[in-house]
Amino acid sequence: VIFGRPGSGKSSLAERLGADFGYRLVRTGELLRDAVRRRDFLGQRVEAHVAKGDLVPDPLMFELLEKSLTAPVAEKLLFDGFPRTIGQVHRLETIQQHLRFEIDAYLDVAVERDVAVARMTGRRVCPQCGATYHLVTHPPRVPETCDIDGAPLENRKDDRMEVVVFREDLYDRNAPEMLRYYQERHAERYFEVDGNQAFEAVYDAARTALRLSS
Ligand code: ADP
Image 1 (cartoon, protein in one colour):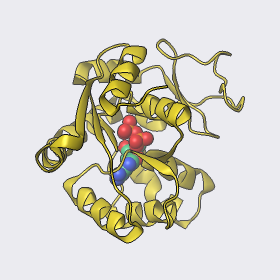
Image 2: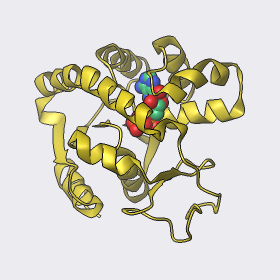
Image 3: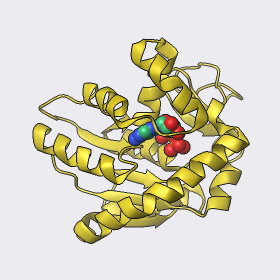
Image 4: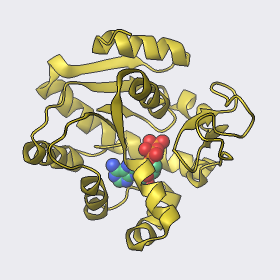
């Protein structure tokens, strides 16, 4: 499970770890954006929450998440964006019991708020595969085009400044309690990396912490 404030780079890190070490990414933000694009019943109900940068209510979030997980869990999963609150922590424990999987590691990508906010202007995402880019720190090979599938990149609606501030505030309200819970209960599986560094340094620190060698 990977944690980090909006703009921490946790999603770029998750993508890279997924590609290099064979994890299937379980990304709640991406599941939600897909539902919004499909404009199905659930998508319509979550759209306003996501656009505001607010948390999607738990019943909807759980429904969407649980649809994407099936037993037996044969793959290695990497959760990106879930859990975000102590309530979601407990739901994840229930899911674990039902689907019988173990969580090997909790990785917190710790970044100062100002650094994170600065990074979020310039972010681009691929509407087709969800890959994330940054105009300065992680540009695509062809400007405004996804390296993976060639789709034109988009801005995220929730990367507008007032929405960014809202999302950071929400993180500051919810994350400390959740992270403390894991630090206290799963100290031997809890790792923190300094996400203020350049991407490659964060990636190396994460690999070292998780004892992943290429
Ligand atoms: P970030 O971590 O940068 O906010 P994400 O792509 O993970 O980006 O999430 C985007 C949005 O999706 C959030 O602002 C929120 O509206 C919604 N969302 C994602 N994960 C959850 C979750 N676990 N619970 C509720 N809402 C969520």
